[in-house]
Length: 147
Image (tube, rainbow, N blue to C red):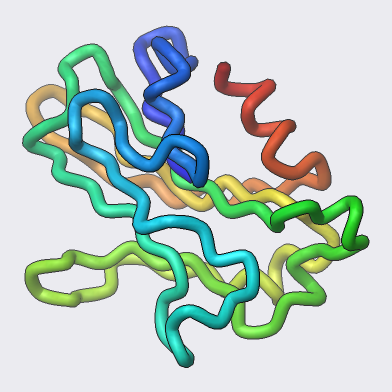
């Protein structure tokens, strides 16, 4: 999921929260390829992708926080420590160069949600900051934080 935040550190409207029920931001800058509930879409590669075109980001958006959560984690009694070969990575789609990567099973053995990193505006440029903040509250805890 991606939370597109304004100066207040919150999403300006619900449409700026890109996830499985809202796969494209209103400005067209952030788009999800959809949700893979099984982890089997890719045959060993990326199962889900969020594409970002920074040239299209609405000027009121100051940062984009990228997250990963486990679908129905509490009901399924599952955390990232139980999900094998789970990772999040950021890469340049033009060059396929990997910019950052987290392997979720090692560092987040009891968490069900992870704030991986954020893109943020600094003047006229976009910068990336790794975050690596895990929690046990799933997607709802992130929605509560940013909505």
